[in-house]
Length: 257
Ligand SMILES: [Zn+2]
Ligand SMILES: [Zn+2]
Image (cartoon, rainbow, N blue to C red):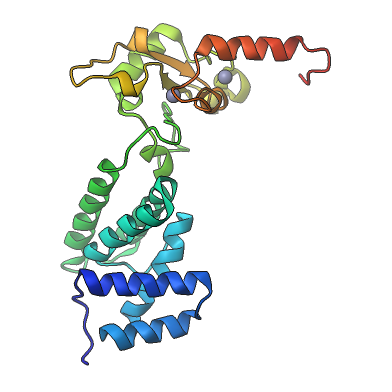
């Protein structure tokens, strides 16, 4: 069989299941690569793409050998079906890391730019098809630290992400946490100025198509710790409930301050 790179769905799925076998330790990576070369007529480099990407996607880390758009699509959907939404989020993070790595490091050879653009569009599409707010929605204002974290971006609920609504909520409530009073600027100085999550207090399940976010009524600035605590419940806990919990904990004589 001649070396090929234009694989169809079924062939990519074969490569996927071999890559999964490698990740599980059923066979070594080089044996997996050989099997892909044998079954698909793939080039060694292409076979290595398939076996490198799978474990990286499960961990949300960078893989350097880029998959085709078709393979990215199949891998992300298969990982979702097999391991659930949290792993889908990690897989998408790995895809984004690959795209960003090559956008930074690739010479402007003809065609590659267009390829990255198409893969980025695919990434956006897969991201848009990811039900949000499942782990917990996150948002950060004025943050450089988090701007590259795909997971953070993925988990943002769109009402919490809307920059105008967020700005209006912060203008009204300030940058202190509405639950515990934490103030990033007071703690971290210049570095913490303007840093806060924004929590959307309306249960997404109750929102209809015509819903318009009301920043004052529906959004509250909260620190990331309290934000995570609020989302330990589904729908999210009331901020007043969390406030009472914090107060009760602080009143305990053995409480650690
Ligand atoms: Zn807080
Ligand atoms: Zn929230």
